Image 1: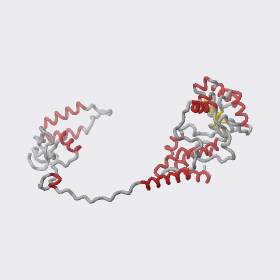
Image 2 (image 1 turned 60 degrees about the vertical axis):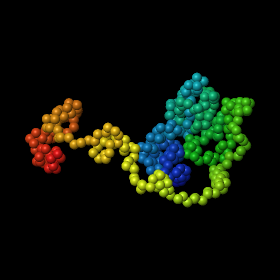
Image 3 (image 1 turned 30 degrees about the vertical axis):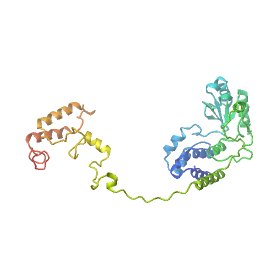
Image 4 (image 1 turned 135 degrees about the horizontal axis):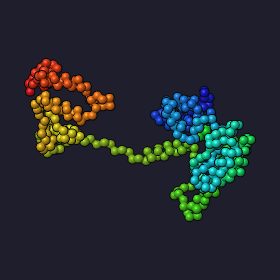
Length: 368
């Protein structure tokens, strides 16, 4: 599917909200955006999001399948969700769901033949004090009973838009997806209706009754636009910068002479140990011939010893083979057995691979 120019322009606007090196953070609103055009997140929508964000389709699909608000198959104009979790179930939520399923002839995540209603049972709609609850495109219908739920869906099927108990006026799923993508509802009077529910107001009344309030909070403070807030923040920053005292000029500092710094007229000599503590610790625990001076009392410098006799090599090989069980294919683990046998025979015969003196363990012609 080729998405409209409006969707592409909105996609660019969404991506511009985030820093250039954090553009993948725009994926969630972009998924809502493609859902607003198709009614669900199709394979073409996944490909579109991957294309504009420079991701692969697997990364986009992993996100789209994780969140339940992204639908992966065509969905009706109105998504009717009934809470069947513990509290709402006790209050009758399952009965509401069963009544709607029987009346509409659909089950969970199924859509009516006219494409109007998609029904789903929800694990929790976060409104236990209003239970049982039902939402239509995420707007609440509180304390709903089976007959009231039937009245709502029938009104939706004939083109009506019943008023939710709380929140703004109902809109279609595609219109809701535009809002979830971060764009305002442009319908005339879209947010003019609705109001808070009684349980929500109860907490405010208790706070007022007992004098509980946020220090310095004025409920009549107007909400500023982003441009106004940015302008005010810039002005505050400018005032703070102006209030800072001017920095004092830097004073020239004469470098300390050696005798003043150390009490000695001897020339400075680099400390014998200029190594990092990590290197010193490693050399203390595992000194080698390259360690100039032992780093701890009692440390012994390694010395070259005589080369092992052939029979010692054979014993070492036998011990190593015993400690390493055969691999799954029946062959000894490690190097091929043929190469080991050849090396042992050359050691016993007194000729190395280079034909040198057997006492010359290094193969350089210098006896140790």
